[in-house]
Image 1 (cartoon, rainbow, N blue to C red):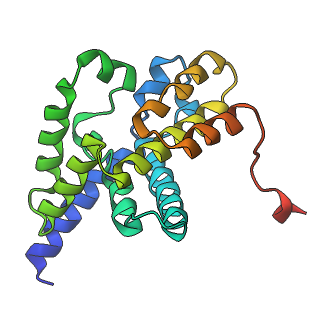
Image 2 (image 1 turned 180 degrees about the vertical axis):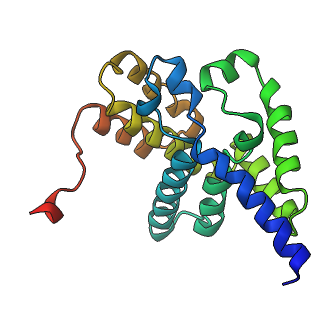
Length: 195
């Protein structure tokens, strides 16, 4: 790898570091304290991980899905927020699609010097359209991660009702079931390893 290519990669990587400190604005808008809202980077990691695990399981069940593409999509899905900032889902909904162009410009600015920029932009755009199974799985993982973050915050009861309404985007029965299980307290973190 040439020094100039390495420099371009590192410039993007250093820029993405900002996402580690960028709080998820939707939580702040709902009244969460800064230490109760996770960062865009933490959310992207958890979303990508859950999306990959879900995609692998769906593939085992005979669903035609690409787990590797799903993983990449989960990693890339909020990458533009490093440049343009995080705008809460409620605000995006009120803006009726205006933020798509803004976030697309942010993605282009961020990855423009990378050799695989076309792949990244294509996968990101596919996520934004929510038409492929991979995009819908990532959206379900995105929703479930946000729900798990909100569920752990005292005083978030009013915000939790939003998570029941996202099912119409993914149309996966298991997504609706997962949200209900979490909201009803029917699933808890593993604790056996602590014994």
